Image (cartoon, rainbow, N blue to C red; front, top):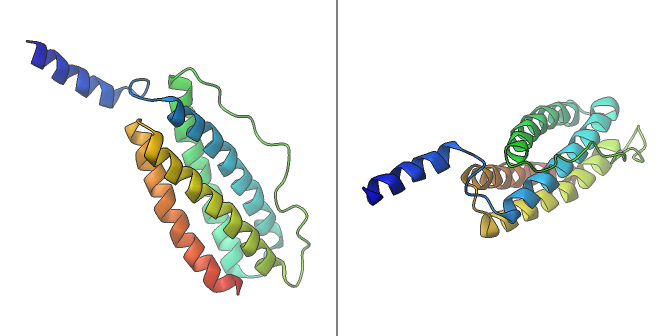
Length: 156
């Protein structure tokens, strides 16, 4: 009977995102939401000022992906009764001048930003417990490493 209850509890834990999380999961989701919001702001600048179709297309892709992640992480935080970070007041990349050289400067700025995201994801993979958060961190690590490799080849 006890074994049956433990098995049922295990299934409930997987279905209920309010169970089986630790402070590291909360902190990661809050900080990654802010990080993604900054990525969106940076991408919005590139969507307006980008010289190449690569930069404009990448910026649109980043905006869509980051918004989807933010919605998911926000739902987890709300289910845990934790605060969801507000939109940042600053506009990363706003100081990058439009015109010749914008793409190279933007890609360099994006590269540093993505590296920070990978570091954040790697950290929670070592200290977190919430399965969906760890899956997201793994997906972020893989996607941002691929973006970094591509960006590095184009930033020159």
